[in-house]
Image (cartoon, rainbow, N blue to C red; front, side, top):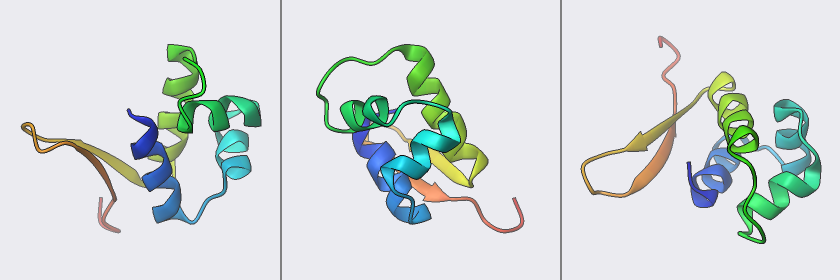
Length: 77
């Protein structure tokens, strides 16, 4: 997951960084630093961010060199 995917996923969910931090059970500074590329955060923190977004309905897209993206899960999924 890239910082841009995290920002885009939050936008789709209409989540703030504090909301994501709470959902991922991380400190706000970890989310902010990851999304702004301020520092390298742990793989565990990135996994927690991704899992929180997936649990909220985000699907991560990494298709054939077209670049990473995100979308919301269909209601039927």
